[in-house]
Length: 95
Image 1: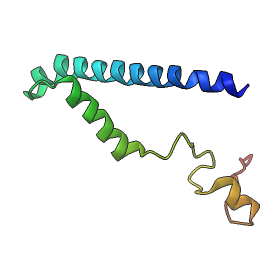
Image 2: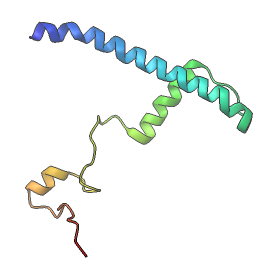
Image 3: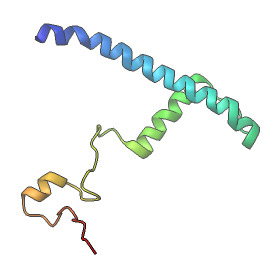
Image 4: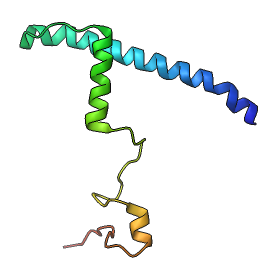
């Protein structure tokens, strides 16, 4: 089982690289097709589009993984609830 997992690592790296390249190309095409005529900005290269995506990820997404906050603004969610925190799910009231 571990041998199959080790064989998939190069494929995962290849797919992630291809996906990032495709997404960077899409951003470049959209930027160069729309923004210069609307806002009179200059066109960008592929590497500038990749840098723009990286900057947006750092500013708006971070690199903390794919953790979603399901508790409605409650930080710590499950851990906080287990240890007696005041993070209770809100119940709908029938009025």
